[in-house]
Amino acid sequence: MSTSIRACFTAVLSLVLMQPAFAALPPQYQNAEDLDVMVEYVKQHSAVAAAIKSIDMQNFVIHFGAACTVQFARAATQYSGPGPAEPLEFKSANCPVD
Image (cartoon, rainbow, N blue to C red; front, side):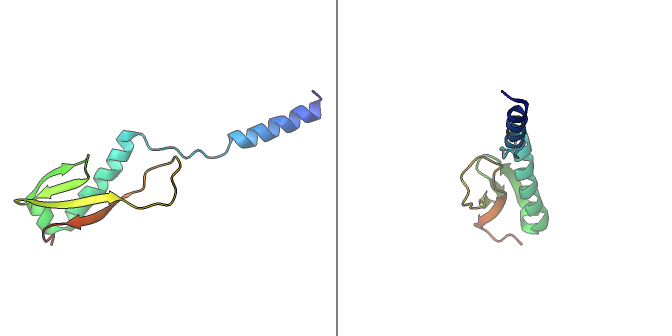
């Protein structure tokens, strides 16, 4: 292989390999971000903060009061490839939260 072809091949290969990778966050970081969203919600809503019972990280639900829940869900996205998960968003509450 001539030197110029080898140099060109190396340059192209370098550019391909240097493209940004969109990878999912490791679970501990994704869980920490999700928990931050849910805790921030508790801090901003006095009724929830006053009567919080638990935070369910598997189902993204805050339990408070006698039988009240606040549900979160991932933001909708059109992109279906690899990459970080969409942030959690408030979905619904079955009791007054303020």
